[in-house]
Structure formats: structure tokens, C-alpha cells
Image 1 (cartoon, rainbow, N blue to C red):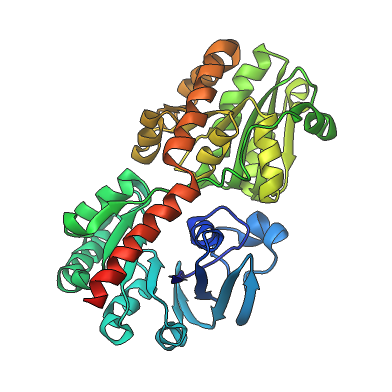
Image 2 (image 1 turned 30 degrees about the horizontal axis):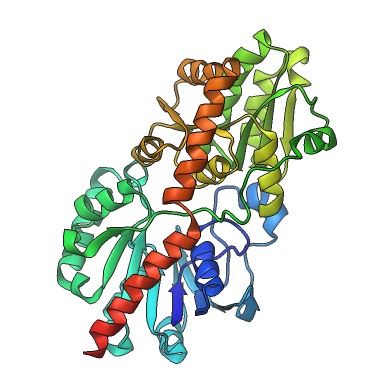
Length: 397
């Protein structure tokens, strides 16, 4: 099949669905294209968080082939928050003559434009949704936005083959906030590349290279280390435990803005604990697997994170904030949840894992099994491609 993915922002090499699903479609012998804007996602404090690792936000226009995927970057004429207006979008989609199109982001301007042009395109269209309730716009403006969105979807959703939620909570958002007919909604979960994330035997060698004792208990958080991800919450909880247990080390891996760095520095003002705090910049995907393997507990104290699945795939115990998406994962066997933002509860949850090695091993073993059953990208890509084949057959009639 010739599969076209369309997304507002694409960061090749990072573990986001906009990159990983096309990658696995290509691995499965499909001809794959991605149309995107000329820039990376506008995360808060981009220069401090992602800039040093990814380079400048503005990537420019043009075409390149990477990992068997043809990436087409088009000029962004304007940008409202995280919604760019991509120039020449529809004409480029038509030029590719894809068998199917998947647009990432059900509330993006890009999705609306493709849906409105579907008759002209003459190709089956799929749309996915990554939104969870905690990130949905609130207040009067939010109510107005979703009222308009439901009206749009009521008229035009028949032009879309399937709306995918990448977690059960995302499915619920499609149904309740966006007004999509249940017959058009399906779960297509975020996946894990188990060729990259898997248990390794050389965790001690990485610890040595990082200056961390082999006998240490390592707590780790990765990713965008901004306030919305709560590294200060983990720091406060870990500090309590580190004062009682001198074997515990805390590692932050990723882009940390100066405001959060200052907060964590204040928490660790006591010298005997500060020497066991380690701050490292972003790592490549393959390096990230080694960091997960060297950790004993990986924590995502605020917000949902795909990296929780990646860490679980390596056999590391995972603790997540108790958002619906994370609770759903935990119910399937991926890690534990705690009451989001509650420092004392997080400290208790981590303490249980730190002090009971047998329990920690059970949590880790269950997580590996859950990832292999529910969350491998090979399985996710296969499920999507089956839907594509059915849509193509329907169109041919």
C-alpha cells in the first residue's frame, strides 16, 4: 500500500506516534509518505528543553527520505498555539496519490482541511486523537470550542473511515467532547518499538560511565522536564527517601528549563543528598533504552507519557500519575499509579518498590508481558493496515 501520514509537527527519531507508526508501516513493506510543517513542535521553552538536542525549531521546506519514509516539509504560513496553517497541503496530498491517508490530531486545522477536501482527494481518510481530559480546553472558551467542533463533526464525520484514540481515555474524549459516532471510533494504542526497548544485561557498565555506584537504587524521569511533567514533584518525594537511604540516586534525563532546575536545586540544598542527584541532557532513542535498563524505578509524576510504555518494555518498574490513560495501562499490567501531585503518596509508592525487590520484580515482569501483548508497534501497525485494506476494498465497490 501507499500510506500517507499527515501531521502538524514531525520529530524523526523521537518515539512519537507520528514517527513510529510510519516507521513500522515502512518496515512492513508499505510505501510511506509523511507531510508535515517546516518546524518542530512549539514545546514550552523550546531552546532550553529540546533545542540543544533537536536543533532549531525551523527546519525549512523540502523532501528527504529517512528510514524508507519520504518526508515532505511544507511552509507554515501562520501558527496559532500548536496549530499551524500548512501551505499547499491539499495539492501535495493529491500529488502523492496515496491509497489511504491518516491525519494525526483530530482537532488540528490540518485535519479539518483534509476532511473538507476528502471528496476532492478521493481516498479513505483516518484521523487519530491524542487528547486526554486533563488537557482539554476548559472554561467558556473550551465550551464554545467543543460546541463548534461537535457541530462540524456532526456534518462531516461521515467522510472519515475511523477515528482512532491512542488510549482508552482518548477514545472517551472522541465520544464525549468531540461528538463522534461510536461506530466510527476505535482504539489504536500508542506502541513500543521492542526492537529498540528491551531488557539488557549491561546496566552496570552504564552506571559506571555515569558515576553511579553499582549497588545504587536508581530513580529516573525522562523527557520534557518542564513544570507540566512534574519533575519537582518527583524531586520532593525522592528527597524524603534519599535522606533515609543513602543508596538511592535520582536521575533526570532530558530538557530541563531553568525555572524547574532552580526549584530542584533548592530542594537538594543539603550536600549529602545533592551528590546523588544527576542531571543529563536528552539522549537518542537507543541511548534511552540503556538509561531505562540502568534504572530500578522510572517515574512520570504528572501527565501521561508514552515513555512509561518504553520503560516498561525494558523490565523497569514504572510509576505514573493516576490519569485515566495511565490507570488503563496499569490495569493491563503496566506499572503502578499514584494520586497525581501528592508528594507523600508518591514517596510511599516508590518506597514500596525500593524496599521490596521481589515485589518490584513482579511489577517489572508483568509490565514486559503487557507490552508484548498489547503495545508492540508491529501489532499496532498491522491493525491499522487491516483497517486500510478494508477501506480500500469498500472504496473500490
